[in-house]
Image 1 (cartoon, rainbow, N blue to C red):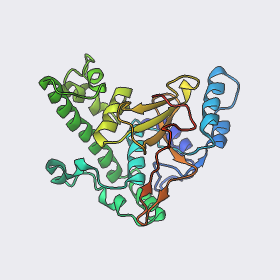
Image 2: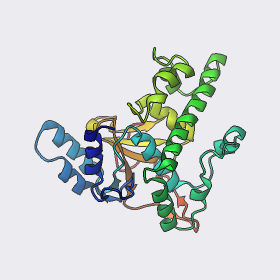
Image 3: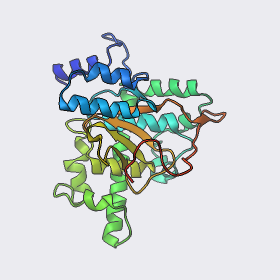
Length: 277
């Protein structure tokens, strides 16, 4: 990486000295404080971003995610491991199980919030294990893309985002999707919105993203995929659809004896934040 990129990363995580193990996901901090520190001035963009932060500051804290091209994958993986209630069904598939793919078991079996946090900090420290997991997420996305493309060719029902994913001239099929898009994620590019849909679908999760630059529009909160919502989405935040951070509820859900969250969906299907349905 270039010197400028390394300096930006050090500025994002100032607590780690040279040579120390550096966490890829910082401790939680107050959203309003972060907003006032990072978005000073009265430009149109600054005012808009601060307004977006203010709209959710009473509900969430922020965990900053290392600012490289893996950030979307890293933020989602962190949320999955920190919220896992049970092993997802796809982990039992023979081709994944055979390769010991994604060891979710440790996260699911954590017996306390403190143990779950320690486990996450062991993973997200910029070592090989973390990057192997991030690359494994890309493999899972490719595997899902192959399955969905096959279903499309058979005329089977597929999620709406599939038509957008394979309508691009650069990804007409899984092979070109891998060659022109997925293989570059983490190196010289991040995930596009339609690929965020694929990521959520692959994990059998819903990713809920607060998009600050879309404040005052119906796209302020967007779901990936938007037809696959559940009661416990993985909550992220972005200022520009390029870098993603983690949102942590100020009033976290109740946890059972094993540190697994108990989610209670809103009684009327609505939250206190205007959502895009």
